Amino acid sequence: MNELVCGTSRIVGCRFSVFPMTDRFVEVIMGALKSVQTDKVWIHTDDVSTCVRGRAEHVFDVTRAIFAHAAASGVHTVFNGTYSIGCPGDTDADVYMSEDSRVLNSELGPHADIESACQFALYPLGTEQYMDIIYGEVQRAKEKGTFGGSVHYASRLDGTLSRVFESLEDAFSHAIQTDSSHLVMTAVVSAHSPSPKHRSV
Ligand SMILES: Cc1ncc(C[n+]2csc(CCO)c2C)c(N)n1
Image (tube, rainbow, N blue to C red; front, side, top):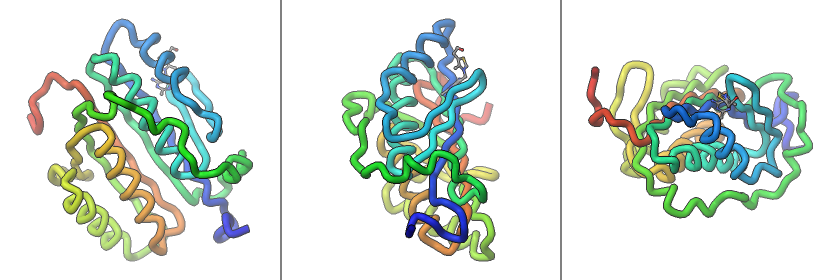
């Protein structure tokens, strides 16, 4: 019962797409979706995006692994995702909340070292302290060494794919331990971009 707060489940969800910039996009996307172990999450793919829902650790494990597999193709690949927790009425498939916390895709091997650039934004909803929460999580990324600067409407993270996703998971999971009952985080992660870092055009 402690999974239930304010009448809503603490189920975490992410709706995301990966965009491998190659003519072979169908095999890269479908190959990534098939290679990843998704038994501990609710997952549904359509023509626009994929949605995964379940415990936070599995949602981050699965989204990171799908992006890592797609990026391992070596082509410029972008992940665009929206993570959410506490969305009122998000109780469908609550059965996945009783999975244990052992992640199924921790062995990313060399894919984990792919250099990645990310722009992310936290939206703590329903709290007046939202700016403190955002500043706190930016500070956490600075301390980890992944923070890459502020841009309009987002903060930048640079580093290996696994360190960037660690920072995203840290920001999300710490921000929900504050009094924010509903939190949204957007993230765009890019790998193998031919553009130099921070270039504006
Ligand atoms: C993670 C993820 N899920 C779904 C799509 C949408 N999509 C675009 S092309 C394609 C394969 C052929 O239909 C699919 C499923 C995406 N881009 N990334």
